[in-house]
Amino acid sequence: MTELANDLGTQKISNLLIKQAAPATIGILVMSLNMIVDTIFVGQWIGVLAIAAITVVLPIAFLISSIGMGIGIGGSSIISRALGAGKSEKAFLTFGNQVSLTVILAILFVIIGNFFSVPILNLFGAKGDILPIASEYFGVIIYGVPFLAFAMMGNPTIRAEGKPKFAMYAMMIPAVLNIVLDVIFIKFFNWGMWGAGLATSISYASCGLYILYFFLSSKSELKIIPKNFKLDGKIVREIVELGGVSIVRQGAISILMIVLNYSLFKYGGEISIAVFGIINRVMMFSLSPVMGVSQGFLPVAGYNIGANKNERVKETIKKSIIYGSVLGTIIFITILFFKEEVIWIFTNDAILLAETPSAMLIVFLATPVITMQLIGSAYFQAAGKALPALFLTLLKQGIFLIPLAYFLPKYYGISGVWWSFPIADVLSTLITILVLKREVNRNLKST
Image (cartoon, rainbow, N blue to C red):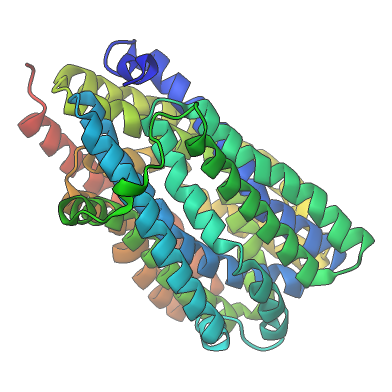
């Protein structure tokens, strides 16, 4: 395979992590602007209910597109280990199966989303005055979701090839386009939520088409070869087992959003949903460096696991946790001192400006320790161990945060929703430490 891919087994771990994590971080940062820009523009130009509507709709779109993300992460784990073991044909076959699975499942879910849009929106919290605005937005972006699914499949696969810069470019293009189109469609054409949805949908399409171009060009060695589109039972099973971790995680996040929006609406009304909408966008953007470290970790760890280089794997785990924890601490300190200024970017509504700062600070309290959760789950995905990866993935959103977000507000009102986040982070981090330490002691002995 490529010299760059082989470097994953020979270069200094610190250099590799920076080389892989920096483009991933930049890409995630810029890609998150797709959601942030929509929220800023609709908040400033349309109103508070528009923020609440986007908060309801985007988890639905990302639940569908997470099919592609899961297939991408599951397949990239197989590809990384295959490259490390010198099995190029398996890598090519895996890629072909990734493409087929993504296209089939994404289109299927879009059809379902179109036929059952109102019940789905109601389930995710589009109630009262939020529903008509959410319906208008959802009716447009649903057509961009298959492109987003393909992009989310292709992105980790490109990184598995050892080409993180191209993965970064794929995420930057739609974010820049979305900013430009939002201004044109919302500000100048006055198309409201329909215009915001159209801008987002076009940006998704640009991302998917760029990744398709990459795989069709000479830049990629994982060519789109028709014979590899035929689904192979063994490959599909392995992709589903490993990628299912990411899909289930997004499913847990979607269930969490249902519970959160229920609790937020019940104990705080539309305003609390808008408050969380702002906090959620800030989280997506500010945590991008930590997410970038975990994304950079995957190909480095996967390649060296495949090559049986245990010492390099242990070093990758240790340094990834250190780098991510330092970044998480910096992020928390920034939120601590500049939370009011951050909120001003999204809205000038007096109620939101009064209620959001304290809630956001609580939600971010455990940010310095969250890297352990991400690296713990990512390690088991890279190693091809689906069950422990699934367990660690579900710890925060599924096992802890969902019940906490449902029960705490019963006793502490809207504050219970905000405190459920740091409590879930701390509990899941403690368990992840125990599980990962046990795995390292048992299966990563010096060779």
